[in-house]
Length: 307
Image (cartoon, rainbow, N blue to C red; front, side):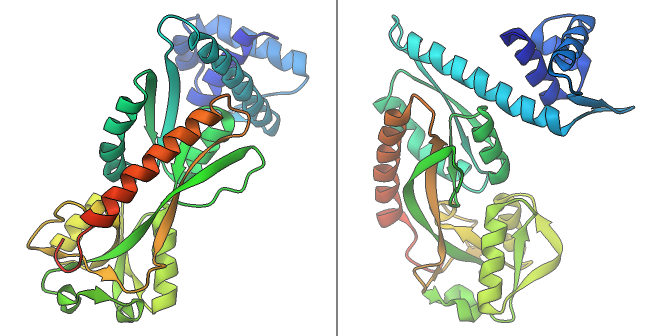
């Protein structure tokens, strides 16, 4: 077994196709297939179930891929650490962020990050929270920004900021003219929510249970922008994070009053593996993000009414 074999294993697990994995690894398909078969013989277990139309990782295969990713991550970190002492001194950082935060957060923090860390080569991935956490643990990501607490023995992190929620309503709705709304004002209302897998959906469902609101039947949004346009069309109400309200939501079609309850929001944090060699860098990045977003949310968030 060698690092090349592990690279073949990871590629095949990612693409579930011998042809595609061979292309990614720049080898012939028979070569990759032979090496995977030899790896299975060496380990004494089948790593893949060869179904008629696709490949399925066996439990042993899933465990082997997780360990292979960690080994490759350690090797990459070794290379990054060594390159930091070279002429260019670039540090590679692969950062993940979830979809209901990324488009509204990254434009505000990336200019400051690149100015503060000019030798930071940043690569970004946008995925749902569960997938981000899985990629972090597997070594495919170096750090993730999440809106939920992470309890994993291999992961550590630090809080960044608390993002309040706002209520996006059509301008003609009775709640549109309120300076603030209370959770109890939502009793009997129907909220349009995101599809399964979004942490914001789970948080909105919690609000529905607390307030007596219900989910809008027959519709689940794929993104915040979809929900925004549904509100603009007068189809209903939705929950909107404060950063998504910093710019006009579609005036004069939408109002976005704040909630009276200060606890209605989500806690955003930066998380990374405990084994990383970039722990100090992560803390520095987190400190810069906190300062930027604190200044952004405090004075700039719309006070009430139309956003």
